[in-house]
Image (cartoon, rainbow, N blue to C red; front, side, top):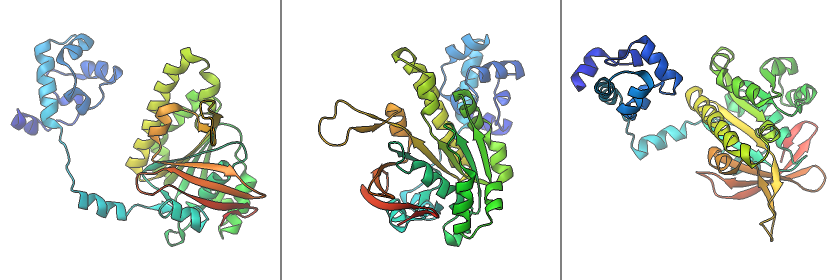
Length: 319
């Protein structure tokens, strides 16, 4: 079978034995859109979905198993790859150090906090900084900014870009802004983003805020299951874009007070376990005196918990 799969050079569903264009279309419509998904499927399930015989379905599953491979890497190889990971400067040396050098590509960074805690301002700063040359902490790339709450302010980008030594008009031209007013618009923007990412060299995706539309549209416990399912799929697509295109994702999140916390700060990010597991790095931002903000690193796979104090100035984020 291994020899047969190799000889046939199986790359698409249609290349599998017993599966033609019509059957392949039925499988894709049912979510079986990759060889990996066919390889772990039950022949009986495939038979019921497509009408093909169980025996033919078993042959297709076996061929898919032979055509797929598991790639092994040593820890040392992954460590060498990690050294080459690109990062975007935040504008604050202390915050960069807290994050291990800045906002990481191929990862989702979430910032949550109450109103006016600085989440959106950090997003504006990153939108400008990603356009900087690499030797200045940028990635020389464009930005896809999904605005779900009507908070995008081009005049703020103009000021921050000027302070960073960039042409403000070019900085704004390098930003693709989508004003999403429904969860469908938010989800579709990400689903269809592959082409524009490649055409415009997008190196940063921002969603401000991630949960606002989900919270307003899916009300009550009865809608919670559907909401979390859609959210899970949406976040997985974001991570897939980050991995595929080597870009960074920055999302802001709303908070609620958890009545179960009697001592300490009851502020809790919304979105439940799905949001908690989705973000590679989680930041909790809160307002301090005057223009100062305290940023706490809550969760990171590579950095210890800690805090940094930043200032939101007219020219952007500073130490």
